[in-house]
Image (cartoon, rainbow, N blue to C red; front, side, top):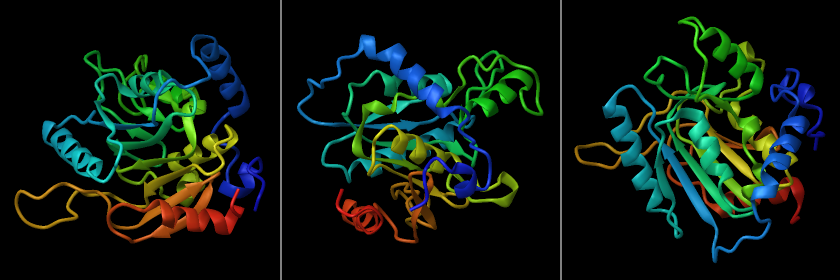
Length: 267
C-alpha cells in the first residue's frame, strides 16, 4: 500500500492535517502526565455525540437516531449532547483512559471540512474542523458571516488518539463527511480522522462517512426510528478508501475485517 506519509499523493493535496506530528506529540505531552497509561475499566467504552443544530427538530432526530443505533451495540454507548461545540467533543474524548474507546458515532450536521455546530450565545462558531488551518481561518474571520473568536471550536488534531483501541471505529452520520470532491482536492474529515488514528498506532481503526447528503429516513411510515445508515458510505483506513458500500444498517465487524485482512493481512 502507499505510504501514509505521502498524503499529497494519496489525497491530491498537501497534508490537510497541518503539522500532525507536532500536534500529536503536543497532545500526548500535555495529557500523559495526568492520565494513567493503564485502564482500570473492565471493558471498553463507546461514545455517541448528537446535537448542535439550530433547529430543535433536527436535534430530536439526531437523538432518535443515536438511540436506535445504540440498540445494535452489545456494550451500550454513552450518549452525549453537544452544547459547547467541538471543544466539548475533544475534552470528552481526551478524558478517557488509553486504549479503551472502541467506537464513536457522530449525529450532527457535517461537511467535508468539519462537523458543524450552531454558534454560541455570543455568535461564535463552534465547529470541529479537519485541521488547525481551517479552524484558524474560520475563527479569525467567521467565514463569510462575521468576526468571532471561535472560543468553543476545535480541530481533530487536538484529540488524543491514544484513547482509542487498535480496531476502533468512528461513524459519522452527517452529510458529506466522506465526500471526495475535486473542489476540495480530495480531502475530507473522515479520511483525516482515519489517518490520524493510523499514525497514532491504531492500525486497524476505520472511519465511516457519507459520500453525499445523509437523511434519517431509512424506514418509511409514521413512528419509525430514525436511521442514517443507508445510501452510499465510504469506509476509510489510514487516510485512504478501504471500501464503499450501499449496505443498509450496521456495517459488521466481520465485513470491515475482511477488507482489512485483504489490505494488511491478519496483523
